Length: 360
Image (cartoon, rainbow, N blue to C red):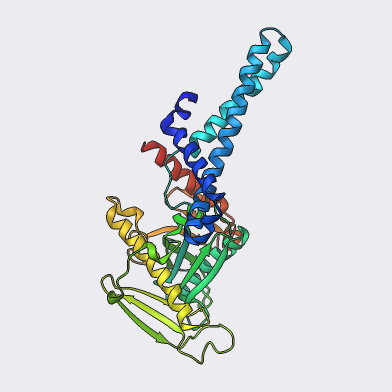
């Protein structure tokens, strides 16, 4: 395993790249280009766990070699050998995992949409529960959340809502690495607030999630392909938000994608934010079309918000959550809806890593 890990194709390129990034970060001229500075800082953060593990592994190997050499002359050093061997083995496994094929978007921020489906008001209320779950999860991880747009139902649920979720610091394992498995149809079983007979109903809501580019310029958008409408904001936003036509709706005519934003104070700010969301959606769509496996793309996340096409079921009477893709079950639905998603997302991530390693 050691020879495999330290082969030039596996680690030497990363060592050289890390050194180059370190040199760039120390160059004052880099700060004159904020976009490039973000890109370099982001990539440097992605390589940090690999470099840290490799440094520890190199030191452990040196210690093990020294202990074995000294044990030949002094038996007291022999007692250190088993512990060092175990340490080297564990670090080699960690480094192998870090060097395994990864999703290129794992360090990215995300745009997440929640849409109500079959079930009317109950579905809209469940969609708002899902949005709150993701907001609470983001808060637990110190991420920044913006509600870019929300279409509220009569009872306060979400017919649809668009969230931007961003990490505050660059990281190898960003927001996408944790939430990328959430796209799909989510089914709920419970007694709706509108049900007078106490009967359990089943309804569904859909989640779409895609990486958000750092800059709009990463995706080429022809202005002639856009229809831009402005209208009066209907949501909360402080003094003046409902008195001017500041909300923006952008329709991308070739694809039919519609993006709205009314959270910002001005029309210009809403337009810029809506363009970022449109850029993210077009990038996800382009990647889906470029891949042979459409299951990784945006359209495969929700074909129709139908109860039969679910990825997960939230059973309130039994306080149970079930992820049908990996057979995960837990009886802590209340805490999951309060943002305690780590056990479920860890299981999904482990299944994804195993699939990637198997595909090598």
